[in-house]
Image 1: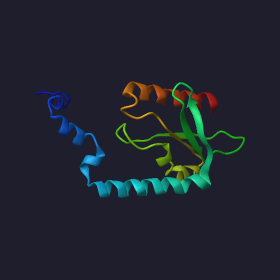
Image 2: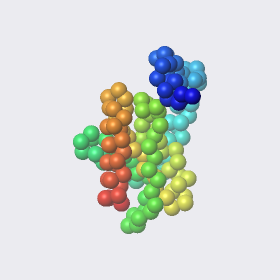
Image 3: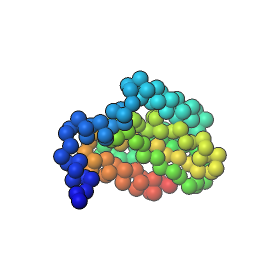
Image 4: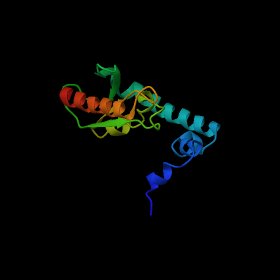
Length: 140
């Protein structure tokens, strides 16, 4: 019996592209409609809950994060959200949708940007996420 990954190594490029991209699973119209809905949910959270926007967490890459639902003079637990997008799309701008629900329970939320493929490798993306965690720990 071979592993699934070994089998996938022999798949044609078009099948891999389809299987590893959400865009390949629905029509372009449906995908864009869902992305608009996703973005509108996040946009609705920015005004009432954003406390610190575009904070540089990694000097090397210049990447930033947005912080929502903090309380002046106090520490809160924080939920760091690393957006999806198959390493190729979306951003922190699309990732504030949970801010209000978490803030109402005393939890801050942090939406983190990172460079996307093909500009960055997966190793670089992981390094940036480690930098984001270190930044939040240091600046808690």
